[in-house]
Structures are given as structure tokens and as C-alpha cells.
Length: 452
Image 1 (tube, one colour):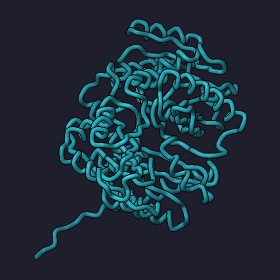
Image 2 (image 1 turned 90 degrees about the vertical axis):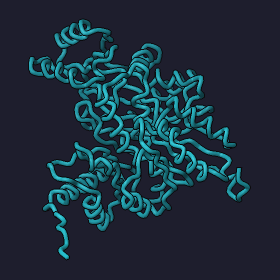
Image 3 (image 1 turned 60 degrees about the vertical axis):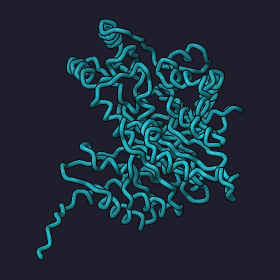
Image 4 (image 1 turned 180 degrees about the vertical axis):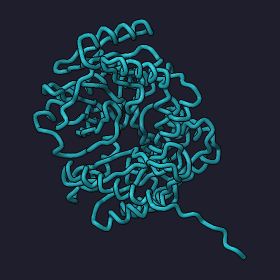
């Protein structure tokens, strides 16, 4: 180790291993096109890791981001950009590619030199992260992780599966899940859907390994919806991996939305706990509000009590790190648990930004990570930047994210803003989206060659 003055100062190593995590389960074998889709989404969402740590840090990204965007975000935050490392893409999985890239690993070693303690800040546990931890330890660093110990990695796999949620519903008081049937074959799937639809209006079929609504679909009792379901199964490989869960579809209260609780589970127990409300389009995640005062106090207290019980079980299984519990409030006022996420989530990503805003009027973060771009023309960050600057002049705090997605076939971008309450944060997000839409809908500018 270096004998420099910062030897005792800890440094964060931010590794947004989102695609790695979503593709990690041994039973999750997908075709190359689906694999590439997971990788592209993971690459775009990895840009949000700029906000996971706002102290001294080194950031690893799947590829070089837009340099102007990277600089703009840090200027807007009043922070210095961190050193950035991006390994050559081979597998498309961030940590595997980092470990296989000698140049990137040498750069990482230089950036960490002089810092005895390295804190790994990650999306969630994957096998490759333990290899990276071992390499850093061999280089002389004391490595602090937000992961379970290697021998308890299995708990991360289990708790992130929909099966664990169904299991714990029979073990904990105050824990309610929608009634359902777990099936393990096509014959059982068809029979379970027919049986449940005969007594109810809709069911939701869910893969054990789905993410952000992928691997889930709602089926209604009419023939058109049933036919559409089987086409969805054909096109969604996650719905072809058994077992599957067939549950009664519970309509949520519009006034409450889909609430969630994020906890950090450490050796001493729960050390951080925050509430959020997700925006869900039937079953797909589209955005989240995070912060204080979003929920009625009685609802929040019930959610926290249930989540603390779940965290106790998770901790007993050896799990450590960020953990999310998703809820649904029915039209009758009953609180249901829908799933666990044994990882960082769309709520816990903004903990540091909320802390930075503590002395400002903004106490709620509004994040919309995948806003679709309509039309067939090319979009660029330069156009988004112009719209963002216009909104900022009116005093709206806003950061663009996921701008890498503007270059994908299905173009999208992300935004983060805030407000004094959920209503103001959502109104600001709507203003930002509309301003960007106007900018992107403008006439296309074609650069012509300059004659000599």
C-alpha cells in the first residue's frame, strides 16, 4: 500500500452490476436476444449509480457514458466527478468483464492505491463480486461490502425469488399475500388459470425471477385476454421457466399507489429504513417517489412492522445488504406483500441524494428511469440537455439519467427531480417530461458538408 496521507481514508467502489444480478440465477437460462436485452437495460440503468455514493469514490460503468452528461450532472450537484473505469465489454456482465480486463484492473488498482479501506457499493450479490473482493483483499485493502458473506450467498438467491415471499406468508403474523397456486408444468398452469378465473375477475402470473414487471402478466376472464396471455408467454422467456405463481390480481387503491419499504440489513440489524410509493402500469414499474410524508402514518407503521419482521428472518438466514419489500393496498384497505428484492431498488438508489437535499425544501425524490421516446428519429443528450436547462432556470431541481438509452432501438431516458411533497415532485416530473418531448419533437437538424 502507498504511504500517502489518505491511507486511512476509506473510498467507495461503486459497481452497478445490474445486468449481472438479473441474469445470475442458475435456473435462469435465456436466449441470446433476451440476454442482450438484459445487458442493454443494465447498462442504461447503471448511470443512476452516480447517486449511490456522493463521497470519495471510484465509479465502474459498463461503457463510457456521454461525457457532457457526466460532467453536467456533477456540476448540477456541486460535486467533483469521480474517477471512471469502464472495462472492455466481452460478456456484457460488468464484474466479469472488469476482472477479465487487465488494463481496467490496473486502472482500478491505481485509483484505490493509498486507501486502506474500500467499501463495495453494489446493486446486489453475485458470485463475481466475491472474486473481486478477494482480489482487492490480496492487494492489501480492507474490503467492506454490502453483501452477505460468501457462505450465505444462497440466502440472496432465495430471498430474491417470489417463492420466499410465499413461504414467509405462512410464518409471520400480519403478513398477507394474495391467494394463489404455484404450478410446475403447462398443464398445471392452464388448469390453475381456468380455476381461478372461474371465481374472480383477473389473475397475475409471475415468474420466480422477474424484475421490474418483466416476467409478470395479468390475465382477465375474457377470451381475448386469455389468448393474449399465451402470446405473452411465447414472447417472454421468463414466463417459460417453472415454477410459476398464479395469484388473484388485487386492484390497488389509486390514492395509495404501490408502497414499498427499503431496509439496510447489517450485522447489528436494520440500520436504515425508508418508505416509497411506486408508480405501476398494471404490473410494470414506471417510477417511484421516495421520502417523508408520502403515506398515511397508520399505513406506514403497518408496513414498517411487517418489513422489520421480514428483515429479522432474512438476517437470520445470513442475508446482509439492501433489501426491499413491495406492498399493495387493496380497495378494501387490506395491505398485501407482493414480493421481496434482495438488492438495491428504485427506492434505495436515492438515499444519498435525499441526504444531500436535507437542508432544502425538497424532501421527496421522484425518479422515472425509463421514459419512452416516441417517433422514429434519432435523439441525443444534447437535446435533452437543452430542455433540462430550460426547466432548471425556473428553479426545478432535475437530473437526467439513463441517457445511454437514447441511442437504443427502443429509445428512452430517465429523470430525477424532487419536491416538498409527492404532489409537487410528480408535477415537476410531468413538466420535465413535457419540456423534453417538445425539444425532441422539433425539426431534425441535418449537418451538411462544408464546401471548400
